Length: 94
Image 1 (cartoon, one colour):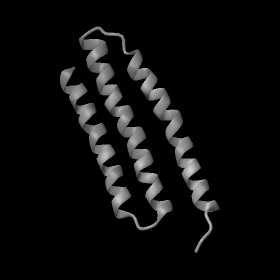
Image 2 (image 1 turned 60 degrees about the horizontal axis):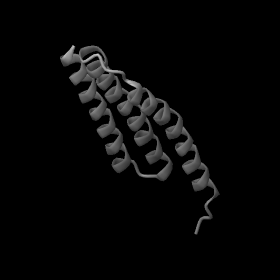
Image 3 (image 1 turned 45 degrees about the vertical axis):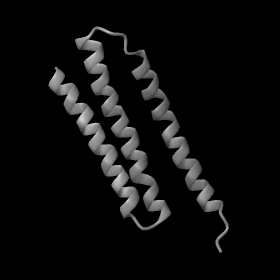
Image 4 (image 1 turned 90 degrees about the horizontal axis):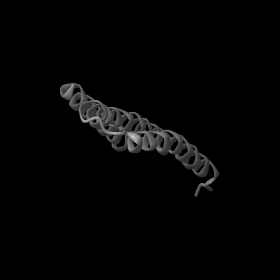
């Protein structure tokens, strides 16, 4: 079980890193918005799954913090994505 928890944490960090690379590599603002959003959401959820597995099953601890973090990240990231996109569309071009 410890190996599975470590694998989930590693995969979550890898997904977040790939999302960061997408932020650096893509040319336009609208193309750069998508990879970090997906990377942070999926990466955070994988890291939280590893944490819940480790502390919930192996150490028999309540995982309420991880559940709250997952709920807040799942709801706040798409809202931020949409607000950034709309602000960029409304911005006057020079």
